[in-house]
Image 1 (tube, rainbow, N blue to C red):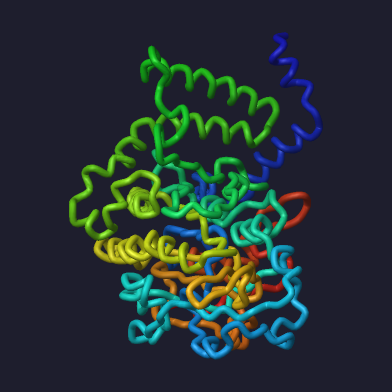
Image 2 (image 1 turned 90 degrees about the horizontal axis):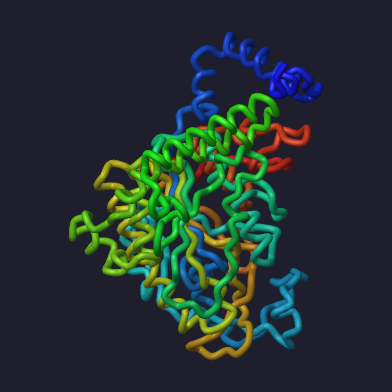
Length: 481
């Protein structure tokens, strides 16, 4: 008897039951579910109902954009310039250590001009967002987001994964797990990190944000680089031909398959699939990242910055290219929205980075017939305070973190264009109408993707885990077209 055969004979009970459950359970499930079972075996678990969005482009503004300087117009604050925030408005809210020691909390009205845009009448920063304002009626505006997290790492984690504690799957991984791949030559979930023009105060961005958590590893985001090879080690080393690389991968996968048959670790299958994907991407990625064939009118639409690798405009154009090639979920991170100081100096450059590209993305998707089934999400992890952090003048000020209310927007993919949801008080400090918890937002996004968030679960540690957690959450129907 060979050593290999002996290993196969003396299995642990756990391995035996794992194999038994896969065989017997799979047979029973196939007989009950018929064609829907085949869908699960190809990388998707199937939707609960017809999705409005087939793909997502999520634009995360790292640091927490100032809602009252962009979308939450508070003209009455001009009369409160340099007056203290009333204690009745703060109402005992905990503050970060960056402002908790301040002797006073002086009101800092926005220095920017606002105007109503579109038939919906959305008040927007007219100085810095002239292009995005043209799409006011295409956008679903949400002005009453709130979260429990007050510091960046837990807040970004909660915004991406539904929980402040790391180790959970992010929204992109859930979409990959549920919807599966549309293109076998590209990842289902891609991450791009854009470089802001102003780099005054950036936050750390780690791969934990696009982790698959307890979902199979194949659903983790694949990070594309803006310089050099888009993906590390995707090209063959010197002297190694494609045929040699193919034979090498086939040999490795044969060994991994043998290991899987004996041990039954699902991550071994993930490794096999990733090797095969990497080989296929050697042909697909160079074509994807070669934007020189884009017509000149596209660069005019997105702006000259789109030609520069790593810029936000370039990343958004790349997201469109990914979407039209079948990538389900593209996540773009843009840093430097942590406006503790110099709002007057930094906000213009940040808005210049996003204004034209966001407008272009919406218009580009419309022209290609993709807007109706591509969901665009824009927003940060929390908002900013109406009171100033540090020095205050009418032309410049800083703002601290504020989790009680902030603004995000969605467009396309079944989001209700022209809807304006939620209201805050005169200080943009507390929500006075239609609060929107980030988990309610997640439930609504899953609804647009075709999932009942209560039933979209994954068994882990004996529990039916889900993106929206264990507390009662609801889909906000007013946000859906």
